[in-house]
Image (cartoon, rainbow, N blue to C red):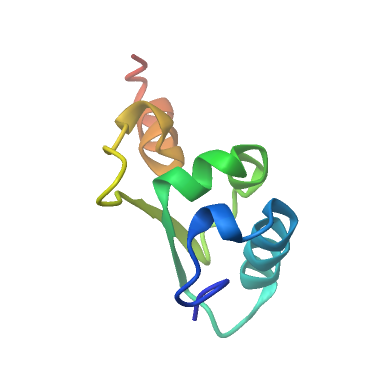
Length: 86
């Protein structure tokens, strides 16, 4: 399930992305949310506020944008728990 299926990110309104993310985090039948890191960066304020273990939010790279470990919310939480801060 995706916010906009074949739509490109620049065609999907930011509010629609935010609402879909929040809806997915509230659903009992979703255990993992895969989100493109470029899109997650657009709603970073919402992604970073989500701290529940389920559903797990996994940020994945895209073909158009390189992966940035410093912006990955899960990686940052793990580093903070282990005391390894960059």
